[in-house]
Image 1 (cartoon, rainbow, N blue to C red):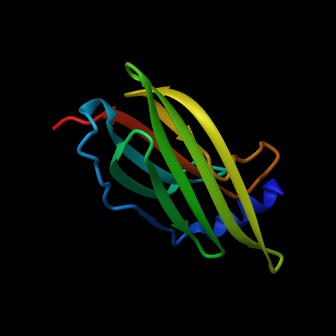
Image 2: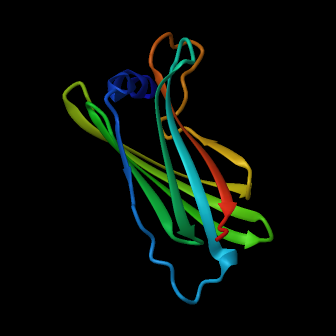
Length: 154
């Protein structure tokens, strides 16, 4: 099953990425609950590790409100939902949810995953919504989200 993801990742270029453009910030939220989320989506060749596509996005978010990235390729669609929860001080909980629809041998299939990752503000996070290539796989592409979260500053 995993091998099919890397085969269909071959069709990632041209790749379209979109995300929510604005966040309604409640008047009752304080600055401790506001975060800047810098996201860099990279597609790397699985053999040479060379970046073949790079898309950057920056979002302002409130603790508990998701940022959704919609990724479209030649034969698949993916939605990656990133939600930050402020714990205490600089400790955050990042909830990642991804839903991927793709065509495999003429059949439409779906894969859904959810993971929670404890992080700190300023720490870089790598997330592979489609998984990573095994050493035994000789072709394909890695889809990697690199994210950096910082506190909002005016």
